Length: 250
Image (cartoon, rainbow, N blue to C red; front, side):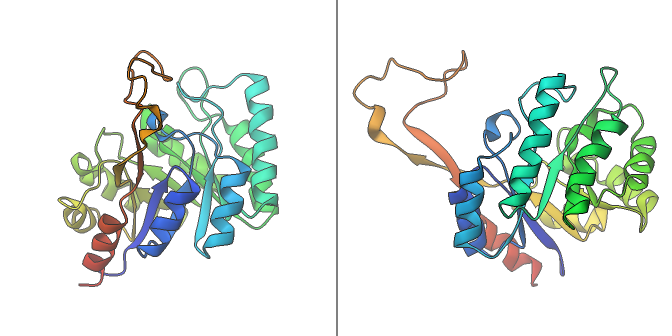
């Protein structure tokens, strides 16, 4: 498993700093990873860039629950994209679909052009994993000049779709990069790398940290009906990232 670029999915500036210390090659900065990652704050980007010199790709996603946004939500995306780039983002991560689950070419083009004019990278995220024809999607995204596609091979876990990832890599060729991600762990990272032949992988490895400030009233929950515990939070597991990078050097 040599010469693999390791991108780490981050949910905060702290995550970026931990991933950087652990040897990550690149990060994707989000907020709200519980809902698959939403647009991060400009403040988290500023701190991450100030404290590290790692490449920071920033998510542009205004809400959870699909990828067909209202006109207002899309205007927010355009504004966020511009602000993130102006404050140091090395690229944008996004995904826009039509109501029938196909790529929205016009919205994708508009966001991509904002990054391209700034000389930055563009990533179409795992929205591709719900399109009806991934080959059609790859062709469209390549024609739009998108840098790469983040995908699980249209499976819940990329380790169950290594054959599809290899097909995607072969089909994409030199036109567009394919970045496998979702469900990559210490147990399967070597197999995923070997079976796909991918030169880069996207990983999300977090562990829980305690925050005891809510201990005085355990009956209060600030989230939705799932009621996540309020006395802990997730942050990048730097030890796991470092171990994955160590494997890459073997």
